[in-house]
Image (cartoon, rainbow, N blue to C red):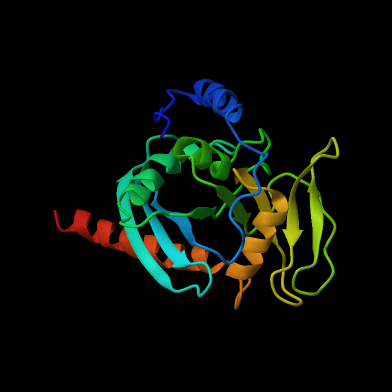
Amino acid sequence: MTTIRTPADEAEARAVQDELRRLVVLDEAGPAAGTGLVTGVDVAYDDERDIVAAAAVVLDAATLDVVDRATAVGRVAFPYVPGLLAFREIPTVLAALDALTSEPGLVVCDGYGRAHPRRFGLASHLGVLTGLPVIGVAKNPFTFSYEQPADRRGDFSPLLADDGEEVGRALRTQDGVKPVFVSVGHRTDLDTACAHTLRLARDFRIPETTRQADTLCRQALRDAVEGTRGN
């Protein structure tokens, strides 16, 4: 695992992104959808108290049954800056992953990988630091353009940068619902990332990994906040 660095300011954070971006692996397909283990990670904040809670939930990729879960709570160590959110989340997410008793397999972030202004969102950052295959599945696009995909589950359209580069896909996970936005993080390709997303979004718009991790990190945050009130 690459050493975690907490930058002192925005300029240093961007320099760290530039340095780590060179380590992103984009020429691997990644594990096949529906095989092995897949882990969702998510975070919740209490901005008033500067508390961040992270959750990691491991699912069997074939059945979507929960295999393992873990949480971690920490202090927000970096201010809110669009495009630099990973620096607020990474330390606590890594702690949650480290607390798992099983291997994570493929990791799914509620956020971006290549679909990021600097081509280095949370999914890429986490992948480089852990060496794991990671994808990003976001609820909303960041700064990129796309056309609405057709209405059926599995339909997609490219998520395009200003220069025409395809940085991700708007993917319809359920008939007639809003798409999600899939991008490669590390050690996967876009076709594989979309295949995993569809398998994980079996019943709902959002992947089951994200749904499970979201519920768990919110509970961990509530418990942490209650703990501070009791002190």
